[in-house]
Image (cartoon, rainbow, N blue to C red; front, side, top):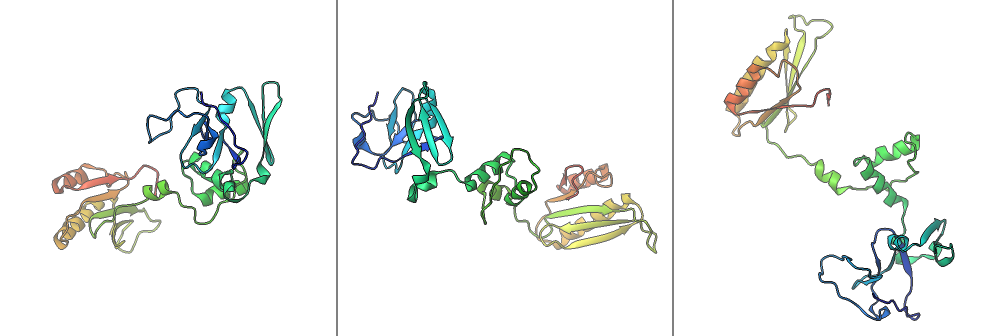
Length: 266
C-alpha cells in the first residue's frame, strides 16, 4: 500500500475527476514509497493501491469512483463539491469557483455536454440537435449551446465518398404517369444521371417497361465512347428496373446493379 505524503510547500490543487479509476498525481516527492508498473503503455490497477504516480502528469486527479468504492459520499452543488464519510462528516471540500487559469479546462462545460448528446443520438448534426433543444421536443434534454465550426471526425470520415469518373456509375429513375399525356402519347419520363458530372439524359416513354431498352442503348453507347469501363447502375426497386431483362444484361456486361433502400426517394 502506497502512503501519500503531502508537501504543503508544493502546489496542492486537486481536480475532482469522474473518469479516472484511481487518484493520480505527477509529484513524485509526495510519496514515501512507490511500486513501479510493469508496463509503460497503459495504467492498470490490479491491487489496492490508493494513489498512482504518473510521470509528467500536469494535474492532481481525485477519482470519484474510488471515493465511492471506499464508502464515501460525493455531493456536488453549485460552485462546490463535498466529500462525506459514512456518518456524513465532512472529509474535505473542493471550491470549484476558485478554479482559474489552465485548470479550468478540466471543469465540465456545455460544449463538452453537446458532444455527449451528439454521440448519444447517433451522431446527430449539431444544428439539428440545438434546434430540438430550442423547440423542447425531447423531454430531459438539457439546454446546450453549440459552438461554431464543431467538427466530429467520425462523422466526417463516414460521409466521405469515393470519387467516380465519367460514365462509371449511372443513377436512374422513372417519373409518372403524368396527369396529361404528351402530344406523342407519352405518360412516363426516364431520367438517367451520371454520378461524376451530373450530366442527365431524359427519355419519354408510353409505358414503364420501355425503360430497359433506353438504358440498354445508353449503356452500350457510353461503353463505346468512354475509355474507362462502366462499373454499376443504381436504381430503386421498381419493377421496371428489378426484372430478368436488367439482371441478364448486367450479368453479361459485368455491371453491378445497385438498388436503393425501399421507400427512401432521396
